[in-house]
Length: 347
Image 1 (cartoon, rainbow, N blue to C red):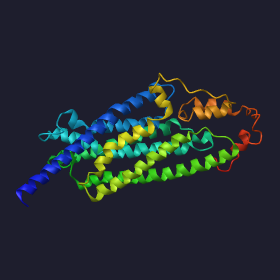
Image 2 (image 1 turned 135 degrees about the horizontal axis):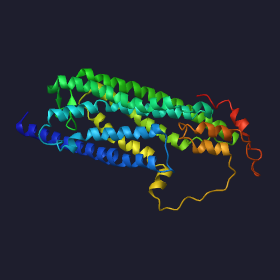
Image 3 (image 1 turned 90 degrees about the horizontal axis):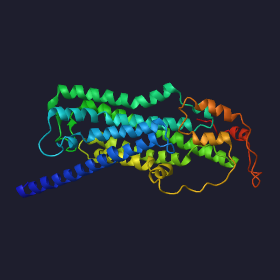
Image 4 (image 1 turned 180 degrees about the vertical axis):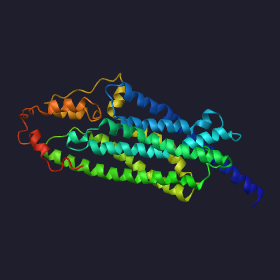
């Protein structure tokens, strides 16, 4: 190869790496460390946009990943000379636990959704021990893989360098492919839960539609979760690419834009937008007959881990149903008729 062609190739590669680095920093900084903390703060502080802890935990894991991904940027070592070995080892250790943490947190969210969509609300209660397990599991995965990477990186510091990926420090070792395999297995489990969730949601919706009632499940949110599941499926593709081509930029691009997908799916719901745009007038309320037990179900979709919820639900469940509307006697069914639907409860 002539010197001219060689220099052109190096220049093109440098420009590509620089553009990819800009994308990496922009998405991690904007979505993972600015917008997602804003969303989590909204979930914590607002009374009108509460979410279940599994969803809040999912957002927190992405915030943690954004901070880990930008360690070189914060230290101003993302360009220029090679960073210190201590900084490189710290970042590569944290990053090798990120995708396992992501996959487990997403799996827990889908698991919670699969439990909550059951027609029998009593069976969908989330106990304290199960909730703690759901919230702690992602961080157990993170610590386990990060600790393993740290031990191997300290033993072989010469295998840790920023030159391998340009965007961040990487540790070259075939032993760490266990992280990729673990993430792949978790993603398969997520897809299976997604299919199960879609089938249950569709069957319940059809049954309750025929009965003229609904069980209080936010199906719009379920659609958002399933949409996010499609993004998870793309993650499986990126994982497979990484298994066979360690130099591919596809996994890095996917990791960079993952935080934006989380924010766009879960941060653009109507109640969240209304909290942020507080100056807008509230939507007009339509007069309707309210079934207390049904209203409790609707408002408590994200509250089923609260200790006081079950006792409150039992009180309202014992109340008689409201009188039928004047213009819909044929479509009116009692709670007993809906509960006897053969589809509800197949979870």
